Image (cartoon, rainbow, N blue to C red; front, side):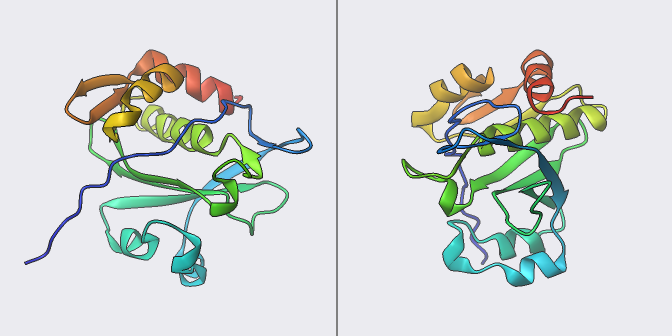
Length: 174
């Protein structure tokens, strides 16, 4: 019997930026978010990530995206796993690269950028920006305050059209 572990979001929104920002210099770098491919996944080392992204990649119901800078697309700053639920987007996993975690992180804005991208995908697919995810209990209030997310009950949260539009406009200038 296959066991499915519950994955609760535990990313911290460190700063909503216009892209990603170097913590030491304050320099801002334009980002690019694209689907990962077979070559990307082959290069992943389990020790570099907290989650098993190779397993996530094998699940055909999910799309996995990587966040890089425009000028250096070989360095992955964060990853996002989403699923199209036909009326909203569900965020299964979001993770910053280890060098973007903790007090010594190199860049700010990774989680905000990835959540905003999930909202953009929702708008692009006609779901009015709606994104749902399951949160660690201790972070529910954090997501309400930083993302404008709404607590649905239990650990389930969602981002509605108004909150999604604010996030998308923060990161994606069109």
